[in-house]
Length: 107
Image (cartoon, rainbow, N blue to C red; front, side):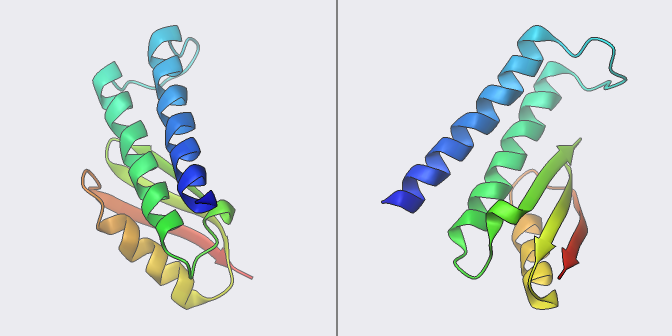
């Protein structure tokens, strides 16, 4: 139950953050995405994070997911190269992901 609640809260926060940026605007930024693309990227990041959370072998709270025009970047820390590879494979399998840049650090 706790894991399901965590996933729900993470998705809600990610969605709200994207909506706030779309509504308030991103003044002073060079981000050229449309509000529709920004919303799609936010949803893609949330979907990737949810899939990472669903895998018990990963520590998803040490992995950051950023999406720009469908290109996902994974950053953060994992324990093994296998976990890094797994996170990349999971991200590539999410709808809306065009490419994945896996910048995870093994420590």
